Image 1 (cartoon, rainbow, N blue to C red):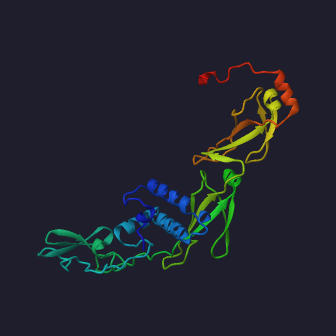
Image 2 (cartoon, rainbow, N blue to C red):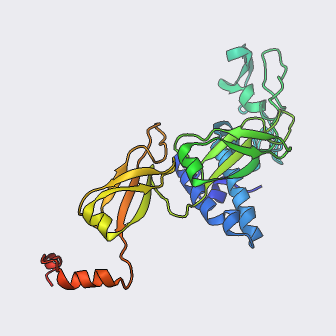
Image 3 (cartoon, rainbow, N blue to C red):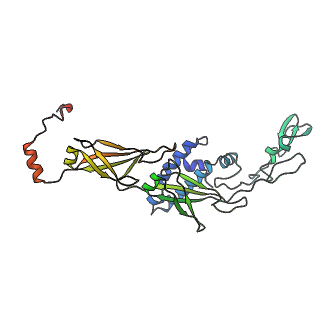
Amino acid sequence: MADPYSTLGVARGASEAEIKKAYRKLAKELHPDKNKDNPKATERFSAATSAYDLLTDKDKRAAFDRGDIDGDGNPKSPFGGGSPFGAGGSPFGQAGGFRAQAGPAGGAHFEFGGEGVDLNDLFGGMFGGTANARGGFGRQAQPKGANINYKLSVAFEDAAKLKTQRITLADGSTIDLKLPNGVETGTQMRLAGKGRPGPGGNGDGVVTIEISPHAFYTRDGDNVRLDVPVALHEAVQGGSIRVPTVEGPVMLNIPRGASSGKVLRLKGRGFTGKDGTRGDQLVRIVIDLPPDDVELTKFTEQWRDKRDLRRRFGV
């Protein structure tokens, strides 16, 4: 029954952005794939995910802050080990008469000695319902079952293209997931009603996305970066070369006299951002010289670049 705030290492008044940032940090540190021989890390990862689920659910967070549920999302004992009426053991507070009147939405409102007391506030959390003007108590909504957490590894190209992913649930059924705009490692998708059964219905399935690293692509925000080797004659003379993209190979025009480090842009070949616009693929040229090439060696013995390339360094 851990405190979800303590589990994530955030203050009780933390914003949703602060909670998300703290969870991402823990998820990267404790992820099971990085801690295969450390079961305690896996347990902490699961606890952090459960804490994140509770604190990002506005209703559950409010219920926890009020003390209605514990850190696992389960209802607490209504009396908490003491008198529901405080240290005096009486709901009447000061001495004096009292009168009753109908409160909002049919709730009962009593005044004791001139001070108003709302029976919904006083008794609502103790008898499983809310008070009404006729002296009865309505039934409180029953808690849903626990959430089930899933991890979904997504190929780099699939994430960039938002390709639909299939996941197998705990009950053996499968479901196709449409990846959201702005998807990244740590993105969570909620599957309503796909969790454990409970008195108030099923909990949810919570899918955490992990984008697999790629052999030669890297991600830079919504852009994709790629280093492409270019032969000396291709850089000097220019021309078109075939390069890979997440959508498949395309022809890229190399400008005449291109130097190593020059970056060329392929529009719309990156990741789709949260606003629905797509990033680009940034191709960096890397001139690759053949080792011990006799002809190239002879050529450079006869030709020299007369520019002072290192003059700006003062050497």
